[in-house]
Length: 222
Image 1 (cartoon, rainbow, N blue to C red):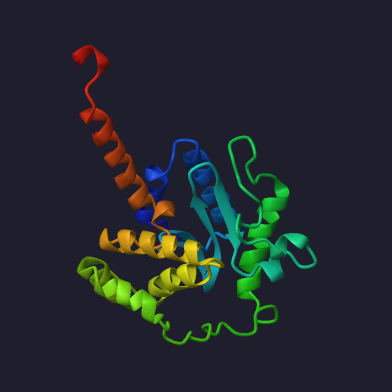
Image 2: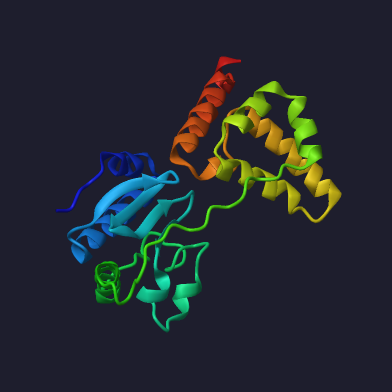
């Protein structure tokens, strides 16, 4: 029996106005394609699960994205299997929904693939990555900011890795120093690396903008 997660309802309601009908549509089509699917929230956005993760959807500032977990099976021989950053259908915006029989068929195929041991022989967990090696310069800078250090130490290994890799992958020293400075500032505020794309932080950011705007005297009040 399909199971709807109230957290997905909350995610949709907190998304931008343009994204809500898109997310509701994607959600409805997934349930039609796989009636046994269950919903959950992973990595702060909705996922659909049947025996394993089938697919996921997310809302961003100007577009939505949708992707299949086992894309190589769903898109057998299709170039869309290689798309990742914007999902497997590119940025989804109003007027450009992932609709039609093709999308319905792909959802159903994803569900069948999870059922078939011939298509997916194992559901092994990915190999656990080794602990993140934090560079000395990163640690030294963290030690100068107790709030940032505490946040970093309490973060999961994946959240720590996102920060370290973002700073370490900078090609220029100037870029690395700027990213390090930004990282310490965000960590001091308790923010994960990709906080801008998380609905909870988007709402807080909007409230802050509103508070700042309301504190500025109107011209008529001067």
